[in-house]
Image (cartoon, rainbow, N blue to C red; front, side, top):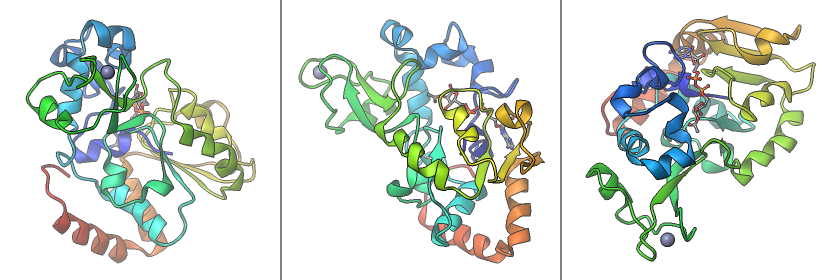
Amino acid sequence: MVGAGISTPSGIPDFRSPGSGLYSNLRQYDLPYPEAIFELTFFFHNPKPFFTLAKELNPGHYRPNAAHYFLRLLHEKGLLLRLYTQNIDGLERASGIPASKLVEAHGSFASATCTVCRRPSPGEGFWADVMADRIPRCPVCTGIVKPDIVFFGEPLPQRFLLHVVDFPMADLLLILGTSLEVEPFASLSEAVRSSVPRLLINRDLVGSLAWSPRSQDVVQLGDVVQGVEMLVELLGWTAELQDLIQREMGKLGGRDG
Ligand code: OAD
Ligand code: ZN
């Protein structure tokens, strides 16, 4: 399970960190209150802040970091049952983890839907509009086209239901870079069997690991990349991870990370 904390090392602010989080920087986005950026009522009143965020997260702008590539390595080794992410920056896909292994629980910018006639957007011109600060419109009815990001109150994607079969099968749960404050995602942390170790690598002790700890829990507080690198070292995978990162960095363009 991952959240915005695995992407801050790539240069993307998280939501709730005091000072640096998006929710403390409302003026830059012209928001009346933090959650408005993901609320439909506010979006119809003023879609600009959301599209400012979309522009910021445009594909190729940011690069995955060691935390993403560690998860990719788990996949390469046949150890990744599934990656449940709350992130909408697409960096898990960009790191080369196949879509079949991913549950993008809060949606992604990979597809978009007209908010009026519900037609899937053909996609052409969507990023051109966003990058030019134009609100993307439906070619059929001129309604605003909204990327398939899950706003507050909206249902999660169908794939989220995979948790019903995945979590009882897991024999280790990794929780990286999330405040575990948003439901129903946060409750997945309690969906593994009680004998299953949960490893939290995060700046703070959060969610059910704080208020309902289990004897098998392992908590590594601090920077997520440092925590992941320590784990990788203990596993003896350091050289392998570095090779993977070097290979992938060569392929990807982009700015940070
Ligand atoms: P939050 O911003 O709520 O939490 C990020 C967590 O990562 C916090 O506990 C930080 O302390 C920690 N963190 C940040 N940078 C870190 C670093 N370099 N090393 C270690 N820990 C670090 O983000 P999420 O839990 O992902 O909804 O937020 C959940 C949802 O709230 C998001 O998906 C978003 C928002 O409303 C949508 O996008 C629809
Ligand atoms: Zn339409």
